Length: 481
Image (tube, rainbow, N blue to C red; front, side):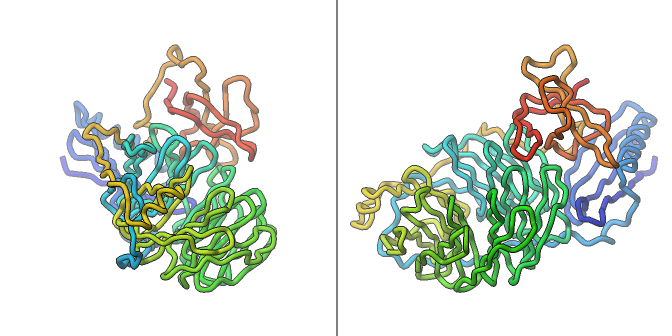
C-alpha cells in the first residue's frame, strides 16, 4: 500500500490560530504531526491490526480537523511566525568581590524566565525547559515545552510560561496546557498577566491584550520599538520600549501617561505604587504608577538587563551586562556591587532576604542578600556555593495537545470533589461550562483549546472563581467516558 499524507492548516485572519495538522497513512501505521506553522511540530504514531482500520482512523482524524476549520494546504507556502531571540552579550564583572551565592542550578541554556513564591522557584530557559527548585536547592520537577521560554509570569496560584511558538502554557497542574495562543504576526518580547488578562509586548513596540477566553480585547502601538517591558495591575498596563514607558488604562480606553527614559527599556518590575524600568543607558528608574513622574534613579556601570525590588521598596536591585549585580537604597544610593559568578542576570526576583537570578549561562542562582552576608562578601568572605544537580528519576511533564492524550475516568469513578465541565458550541466557538451544581451557570472555564470538542465532558479536580467572572482549573483534567 502506497504511503498517503494529508497536510492541513488553520490560519485565522485575526491570528488566533496559525497551526498545521498532518496525517500519514503507511500500511498499518497512522502518524500525526502537529504544531505551529513553520515549526517541526510534535509526532504521534499508532498501529492498527488491519489496513482497513488504519485507513478509517486516519479518515476520522482528518474529518475532525476539517470540521474545526482546517483546510488542505501546501507545506511551506505560509511563513512561520516571527521569533526574535534576545541577543545579549555578557562581559566579566568589574566588581572586586563575588556575591554570596548559596546554591546554583545550571539548566544548560540561557534563561530568561523566573518566578519565586513561598513554595518554590521556577526557571525557564531557551531550550523550552522549565524546572521547579526548592528554596533549599532541590530540583523538584521539569516541564518540557515545545519551544524556548520567553518568560514566566504568575497570576495568583497560576503559573504561565510564554514560549517562542506563540503559546502561553498553564503550568499550574501536572499536565501543562496551552491557555493562550498569540497571533502569528506578533513577534513576542515579553508577557504579563493579571486576573486572567494576558498582556503581550512585541518587537514593533506594540501592546496586545487578550482575555481569559484567548480572545483579542485591544491593542496599541507605542512611540518606540523593541518593547521588552510589560507589567499590569487593576489600574493600568505599563509598557516599556525604546522610547520610554507608556501607561494605558486597563480597559484600553486611552493613554494615561508617557515618560521618556535614558535609553530604551530592557526590563521592567512593579510594586504596588511604582514601576521600575531598567535601561540600555546603565540606569534603573522608579516611576510613579499614578503620574509617570520619575521618583528616583539608580545608576549602574553597564546596560541594565534586569531589576527588582524588595516589597517595601527599601532596596532596589539591578543586573548589568557585565555580570554584576547591584543593590541601592530607595533614594538611589548604591550600597554594593558584586559579581554573579554565573554571567549576566537576565531576570531576577527578591524574596525573604534572598535574591534569585537567572543568567546568560543558564543558571538559576540563589544569593544571600541579607546585610550580614553582603558585608562579609565585601570583605572577601563568601560561602561555598552548592552546585545543584537534577535527579535521574526527575518527573518530566509535557503538554497534552489532543483529547486522545488526556487520561480518562468513568462516570462511576468520578472522585469526590471532582467538577464536571462540558464543551458546548456557542456562536461558532467551543466554550467550556460547568455542569456540576454550585457554580455560576453563565461563567465559562479557562480550558485548553487543544482538547476542546463539542459535546465532550471532562472532570477537573477543582475550579477557582477568578475576579474577571470566569473559572480557572485547579488540578488534573480527565475526560469523562
